[in-house]
Length: 112
Image (cartoon, rainbow, N blue to C red; front, side, top):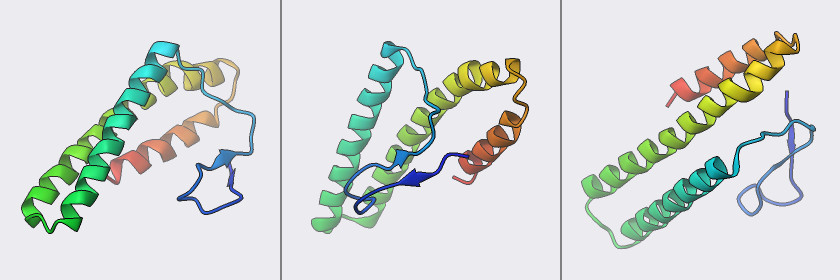
């Protein structure tokens, strides 16, 4: 199980994993994920601005829904790579505990 540490507020800096496991995504996937996440970041800033300007609630909810959909798309890309890369490799290495980890991950995604 990966644990996370931070020296400051989690809102100020991303958490750093304390284990050695890393993903190995091709550069094209990293670029795609970064582009998607930058777009989502912009959507979140836009939603904050809508709240600050007292925009009609239904319009804000519509934007929240679109942002959640975009986040789900990022999760699908990551899950695809995780299954085809990390999980496949660990199973081939005899690490069957990766299946429990995968089930926990899928359950987290299904809560949304």
